Image (cartoon, rainbow, N blue to C red):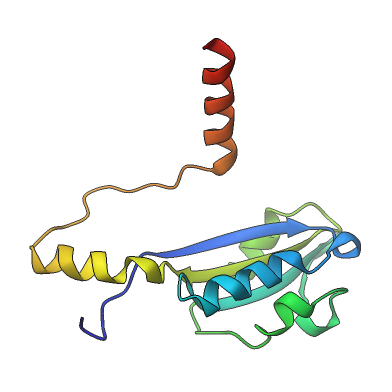
Length: 142
């Protein structure tokens, strides 16, 4: 497989209350990276304030053990404009983790598809909450 093959690249913004952060999300992300399921490009921590936003030092977070390993993870894909836009999606007083990652598990599939002259013509992400709601509704009607 060529070195320039990449799986799909996604971003994810997670909102959380700093006081109740138990570090488990960061620990699970570390596990995904260590198993080669995702390749992490960027991790940015931000906080929405009443008059704007600010960057958060990952090491300063309570229970930062899980995310502390990613301090300084920056590919250059995110800039302050991206962080400001992400912060607008947070409620004032809430923190956010903005992640840019590659679905590394897909590299062999992408390589095979490219070799077969296949092209992506559409794609979308369905939020997990939507899938759960639909499946619960189907179960209720069964």
